[in-house]
Length: 336
Image: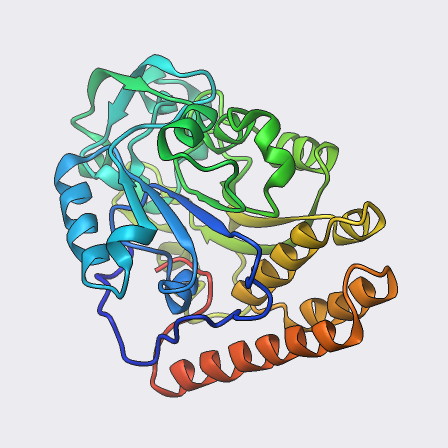
């Protein structure tokens, strides 16, 4: 669960003064109940944000938080809604711990052997899953969300919806052509019925012009069935936290996909290439961002003076992040 956000004085507005001087940049956070992801918070005064959250109480708090930022009420749109790939009525499975709730049915409700195998240690406690309540909710697509918010595209997208990430991406429609970065949770576990595999997600994103740029791995221990303990403690007197030789099964990953920058350069799309540079900086891939300023110049998308200004933006961004790290802030995109 993400920690409550506390505004700090080191947030610098107009971090990308040159790169975004005449290029819009809209960031979409789906499942934003605890404010922006940590690695986005350094830029909370820089972009236009759309925060989607189905809980009314959480939405009210998000609006209050946005209103405290300079110009936040104008730049932040908080939308009380649930997204799906097709829109319409869906069954929502609310687990006892809301962080595991999903529009996909938990496999444990089927009482199958597969469900037993797929449960990691912390999910082996009945109080995490049960009681499970089911209710019907109305959903909208990301394409409909664009119309509601008045934007033409979502340029940077973060999704953590417990298995429905890929269908939400599909629901963006043709506007996905203007998205430059998608961060989504993926995995090959069977905790939710019908959850797409990592291979399926990779195939879809690659087929729509995105490359996999980064992965954050999450591993889980398997429990000792019938006993509220883990194998690591019972059999090995060890644990993954203390023993570097202990490797647990890969449970899921957070994947960062970025639109192919060379294709954007070949197509002469300066706006897209500038957005890619900005997105790379948000995810701290400064070497790639710096390189693209030269590629844009080589392709005639901008001149040497503009390339120099873009590089100054990148360097200023790096310095700002270092200042925040020196103050003890967590800036890495990671599980909290």
